[in-house]
Length: 384
Image (cartoon, helix red, strand yellow):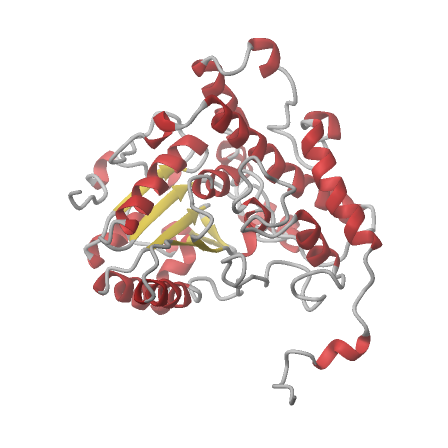
């Protein structure tokens, strides 16, 4: 397979054109053509699931049943679903704070409730959010600072890009042990300005390690616009400096994300090394729910409206209509797009999605909090 890099910068969307339909992308292959009708419908369901997780948690917090900061993945669900769907169960992932659904979407294809699959259960993830004893972090944090060696999920940190060297080490060890696993790391566009990003990607490139670095370019690194953090027209242009592929995906189109990530995954699995996949999207809310009011001031309302114009659920629905996988009547069911958490209701989502998340929330609320004596656990090495 020849080395692929981004196309000429003049042919690519500018920072202000991220949400326009019809922008040019490229991939070495249309992997979506190998998806079955059932696969496509499952990806559609997973988009609803990721959105409902976000909507429901915001509602629970407003009802006073949940504490802690929430980091929304609203409007970015296609990146998670499209990138995870084609992975093998033996592959590793390294999510970040805006990727909470990734913890239960990993290896979830057609087996959401299967406890033995290579991903966290919805009960574990909800227990983490509610700070209960059954959570992976045992109430040390309510959000995404969790992981599982058993499930092949690298623990996330607040220092974005800081887990890329960890990911490189994980698959380096896997290769030395005769494995063929790929690791997919998730990062914001702002993290690509950090030294650790460049050091880690360079290390992976030199050693041809199977590291796929996804850049969720949602145009804002907290309160810093991408134009003040990256001088190149596209973040994927950074790949040229490492001599590796730099793919650009429409982050609102789950099938385009799938194509580009699978291109990078197969490139990596074949022993040719890492890639960068920039997924162009837009952050629907503030950095976290603590930042929502301030974000409405440092971002132009017209920019927010434009950035949310192409909802991933609506884009996928139209693709399924075009393929003949759903009827016009079915397309009119469950209209969740274009609605904030305060506007969306359970009727906007498929019943199986609502029931699945209910099972996780009910489990978490019934689970006790850890004993106070656990406070020192994992802080120091315990003697036998």
